[in-house]
Length: 78
Image (cartoon, rainbow, N blue to C red; front, side, top):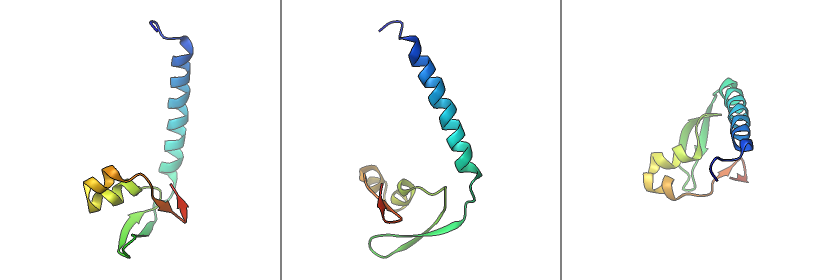
């Protein structure tokens, strides 16, 4: 559709506002050291509210990171 409906810009603006608020809340959280235990028992260091499952997988192999679709965080699948 050309031009796109006006609500599209409104929704994008709302998303960007909410995303900025969420990013600010996460940035304000304390980044305490954590230990991440991998399936094979290896333990990797990380930071709470900073280190992502993708970053952990990429530290092992970029192929693993690009092909991983599920991780378990605090006994919860993500």
